[in-house]
Image 1: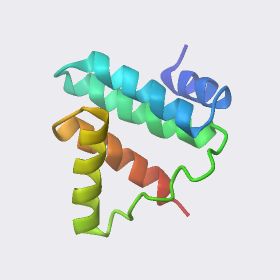
Image 2: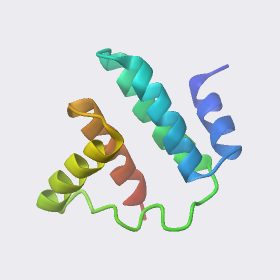
Image 3: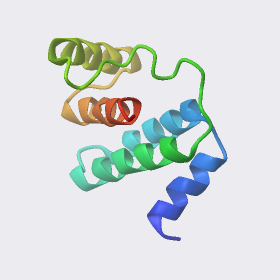
Length: 102
């Protein structure tokens, strides 16, 4: 199955929270593989685009243009879920991209 079809199919079967949880599981299996982390981010965005809304999902997500809030928010969120490093920050960047769409 084409990866985009997989993301869409998974997304249509869940809500935003389910997409994020699945993305975290995929992210966790990547270790230090950049291509794997990239796929995890693509999965997250594709899944969120197709999934059912979760009330309040984007409420505390700062706009990408709010640089200081973005840094603080990403560090805080990565710490809350026990992940560190740029791969985690990029995952939350994908979340910002989704939540910042018109």
